[in-house]
Image (cartoon, rainbow, N blue to C red):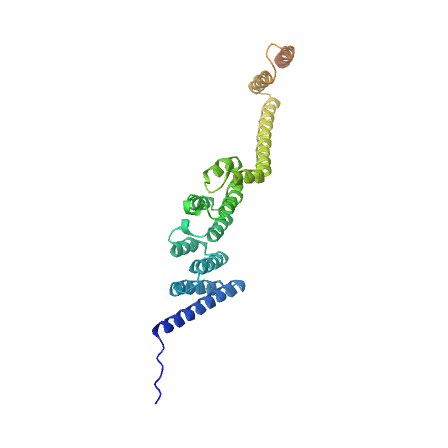
Length: 276
């Protein structure tokens, strides 16, 4: 009677690992399909099952556990965002990577975009600062892209254009050339924002001037006098004192003021006499 061959334990072990890898790929495919068809609960469930399976395959040759973990985590974050359970995103990422600073750029990018969409800019700032200041991330090819996402989706909406140069200086993972290129890219946006701020300030000054004129229309002499004094101060700021223009301008202002005072006094006197 022929004896049965007993499989070598190592072969059984390798066969089991290959089966685990096949199962892991199946979880990944299922999660991708579930997200595509908007079955977000199933997507998250497959991602969690796949993440628990990664450790079993870590000893296989040519197996990239990091790649599988990143892809599963990205799918799970997208699913949480789509089903509006954004409050579970950070705990999930921290559970997978322990700290946000050790998460890959693709995962952090999704987190930044998610919180920017929610207009939770303090959370964006905290996440970006933690990740960008981790020296291990300085050499990440996606480092400039993370900086760009934070600037355009967290700083610009808050109108922090003027702080962009200082922020770029704190990003030590950027080279001098990269900082220069980014500033050139942002130059138009920064210039337009500063121009808009100046126009708003100018409108505010014009509005204040109109308020003073309305006081004049209501017949309040204090408002007129305050307006004349402020007008004189503005003139002296824009022209050189003791110049011919300054002398003529002051003379015109004084004549206008005396005329107003004279006309007011005349009207009061005429009114009183009319009652006699």
